[in-house]
Image (cartoon, rainbow, N blue to C red; front, side):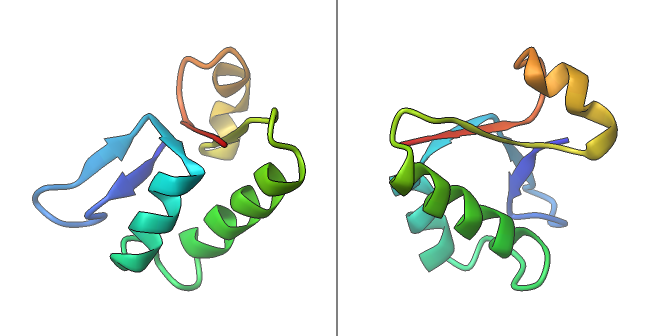
Length: 78
């Protein structure tokens, strides 16, 4: 439902909101899986660099309606 820090570990923690700067820091820390979450985060960064006033929400496909209402999902902004 969210992007997570320490995914799959005992100290797993959902990220409810982050900035592009936060995302870059987490990438440097190796927080995102190379083949699953990292491409989504990089796409979000690219989009927000092109549309600084935009917003990206990452969540599960079946949670889309709640994500649009910002009830769930990780919100990424510039």
